[in-house]
Image (cartoon, rainbow, N blue to C red; front, side, top):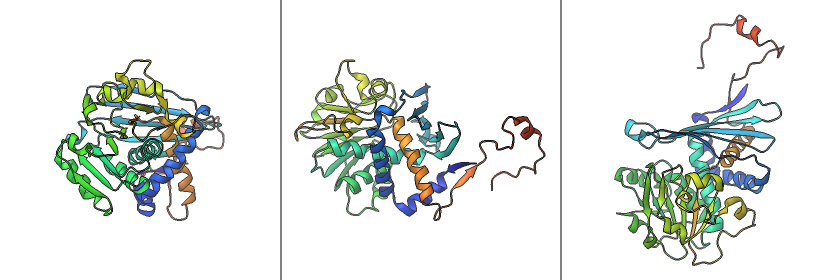
Length: 350
């Protein structure tokens, strides 16, 4: 049997541990795996693009464990009552090839994205950062705000979305954190004014110009997480030209990130170099920094490792499900016998 983590388990886990504690735990696992960067077999994700969106597979292995994530991005889905992004993933043992965990990654992707943003900001944002602008108030926005408030010391978040209902939703949800001041803004320019950190997390699959050079302030850190596929960006190219830019996996970011706007010789630093101390995330208080994040398979690998370990740790408190994904028989060479064996009538899962 293969361990299975579904939506109900994740809801129970978050109710027991809280969003911020799970993000903190994920950040530790992601940090530890980025420290091991050279051991990973890495590749850019495999993407199938359509006019409606994209479906991607994200594989990675450290030689002992193998993981992949299936994820989609369809910006028009909310208009049909569907999520923009859904995902699931598998963690497998390399020695046998057997999967050990099948997990939802829709909620977990939002959590791990916030955890990765947090990791980057710890090294790239000024230590005295207290104000964040949040541009794009959709499905990922609460997780970003909670991570930066609870784990980085942000006291005020200035929020804007072209959809007022999204901003109202965000303000309503963040009311659970009374120490965080949430201030709706009338425009991007108003939202970023006076912000130490600017997080852009919009959904439209297009070359948008959300943040322009005139909006930059000395010492600002930009957490650009919305541009994540070819033809989709959020920053004016001159914002990148004026900043220290850090990416997750350069080969992927040159295709999918804000970096796709820049010449091939435009210099960037990879996140693992910053986290391992091989390169600075920031050298001067007044410099502008950009984390051009598109999401990388290592972060999902870490998430699946974290969930696998946590499910074992909490086995007495939260019962984990399992599914009969892989056949079990006495003779591993006789798969045919399983196909013809008499079995009780199939009742499905109840």
